Image (cartoon, rainbow, N blue to C red; front, side):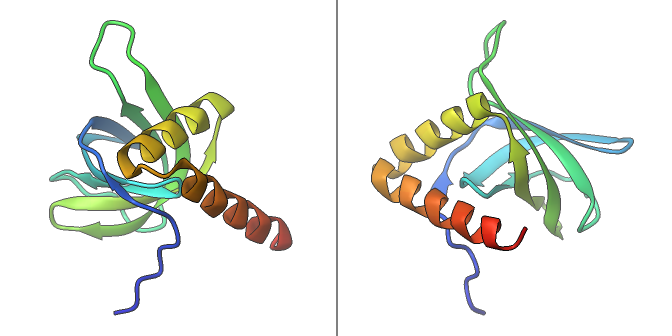
Length: 124
């Protein structure tokens, strides 16, 4: 099977909350990229369903979070894969920092994002 991902993924284990219509599930992020995540959970959301994702970077009274909107791309026993479609600037900055720190190459991460943004602008 050919790998379709074009973003660096990093192993990153933190809690996340995924909401879709009347379904709310909590799980643990297994891997993360600028474009999406894989969440380990025993619950399912159908492929294509829109989701709101909150990733908890700190487990404190006033947590640092990444908030993104997207959709479910994969659903299988044990977890779901979500594609990110929208995020605010602060969430993007946190996500970029996490991926750069975990992956060790911020210039590569930014080049991937620039290529993705350019490709998206041609499809609008």
